[in-house]
Length: 425
Image (cartoon, rainbow, N blue to C red; front, side, top):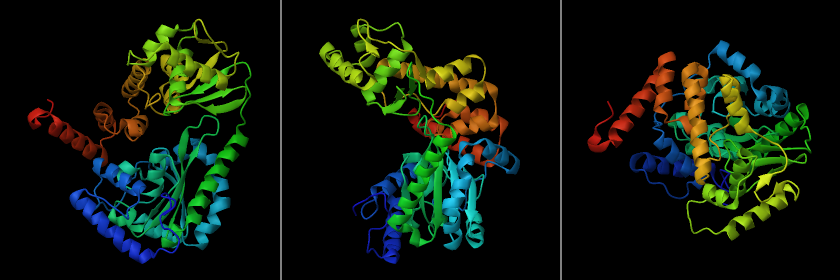
């Protein structure tokens, strides 16, 4: 197979592939081992599903947003602005092919499910309905949930689904991002029969997602700022910098440097930068100077100055926005910008400290506020799925069966991992 993101290569027999993958799924759920012909993207998703304690025998998703809450949430969601576009591009295809058009948010919650009436009725029996949570950590491998997890367009074919109830379906989904910041907004999905395993369906949803991003850019055009820099570093391993009206993706090391220089407008000496960036004391100033030279080529010669190293123009970063809003008590507004931990893959000591401090401030504010929707958004995000303290806060204000079940599961995991199997008091 030339493309691991496509479910079936040309000429493959769908019925035979269903049987083969079903046997592999049975082996995995029984023994934890997985091998060919299971695609790597599916195998990785199965492993994540198992770690999240998803049960293959589950019969349906939990509905987290009821009618009133769902309506208000959808109205405010950025993807509401491109729903007419989704319907125009995909609505006829879904109805004519007895498929479904579905749109989820960045947490895998379905916001819209439309299409052929008989397909909607069948899907409703497993709660593939608006308001239901189809995140990978809740319902295992599925196209919309996996697409927002890996931030890639993906197909899931029949028995590749982790939950057996879903294995009669095939789906393809692609993530949609904010064109200004790169923040993940959610995914657009087409769900139906085995015919959707064709490579064209994956290309189709990917093209629709790109069209949606272009439409969002037209609705809110970028304002060119030739006087300063815009830095987006939350929830991303590679930061985005807006310089001279042009958006650029930085390398991981340059992302760390930019975050640190943005935090220190007065500048940092070479020794201070070395200490902030590298745990290994054997790293030489020559290595740092080479990195800064390459970064200067990206930003422009007049933007990055030396002696001390500093940025010669003002910087607006998403980190600063979150901190400023938290400082004035605007928790909801702060969380709307908090797209995830700061440079989550960064190992630079100073960045790690800043990442932990900002996350602690955000979660403490959410717990103090006690808003069940905000707390649910945190624990359903990848970085908050095992946050026991926030789960407890959510259980106190929204003691639903799924929340209490997850809390018991986390308590059990903590107990099992404690020395001698003794949990915390």
